[in-house]
Image (cartoon, rainbow, N blue to C red; front, top):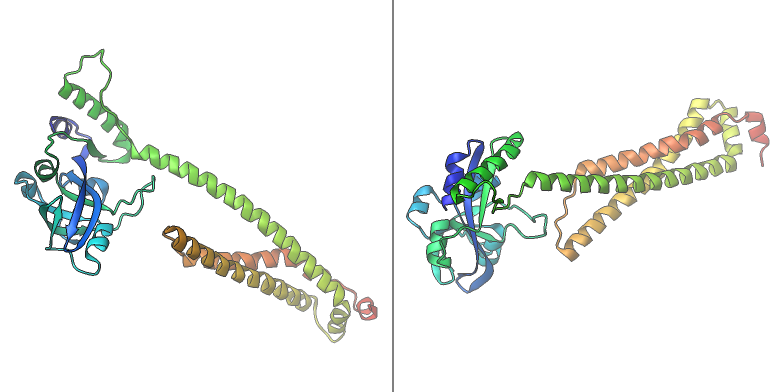
Amino acid sequence: MNDVRAVHANCPSVAGVSPAQDTSVKAVYGNQHIGTQVQGVWPSYLGIREWKIGGGVPFTEADLRSCAKVCVLGQTVVRELFGNLDPIGQTIRLNRQPFLVLGVLEAKGTFLTGQDQDKVILAPITAVQQRLTGSRYVGMMFVSARTRGDISRVKDEIRAAIRQSHRLPANRRDDIETQDLGQMAMLVDSVLLAATALLSSIAFISLLVGGIGIMNIMLVSVTERTREVGLRMAVGATDLAIMTQFLVEAVVLSAIGGAFGVVLGIGLSTGVSLIFKWPATLSMLSVVVALVFSAAVGIFFGLYPAWRASQLDPIVALRHE
């Protein structure tokens, strides 16, 4: 805790700091129970993690000083312990110790490692140390910078503050580790960028093959309907009317394929979500873009067959068998 206080007092670029101590507990409410993690923290932890309260209130500095046995629950804990009941104001038992539920956290989702962040209980670190662990040591320290550009400066200030707190001589190495979530975010961004490029190239090849297929079908259609085209021209159809006819057919053909693709995509994503319990979000914008893009493919690849049909000689077309 001396290290935490040293960072809090001697690092001007730090916006917030909170110690953290985890322990595994059996949480019990009525005849329901769940094995989960209790994380002892300061009230500033929620601001550092940008984690909002979805209902009720968070614990306060007064609760921290008085070692109050209070807590806030993650959404997974609420769902498994309380079901449809309101947990706020209820008392749960953590390793047989009664804790009052003050609030409920908003859903946070799954972490990069696949860990369910909502399967957690937050409580004042003083109560966790006194009632659950019996330890005065801190396992982790969460720190936030005032701005993204201050991250490197914050890390240097933290190292200096900890070295001073530990009274390390200049020739000794640092005895702590710092993890910058910004670096992890950059790594994830690069992976997502590579995956997007790969999927985009696959989609481009698929569209190219599909477009060539549409073009071939329309060219065959023009050849088979040459006499029909000549008859329309003979009774007064313009080149633009002939082009429009075949373009509309190409667009309808590709749009129907796009609609089948959208239905298949929704079905597959829903199936994967149900089987593997992965959350899937359907964006209506992506559906609209997919349909518009499929229609655009029909226009692009149907343009040449439509132009070729419009350039037929009516006399030659009428004589075609």
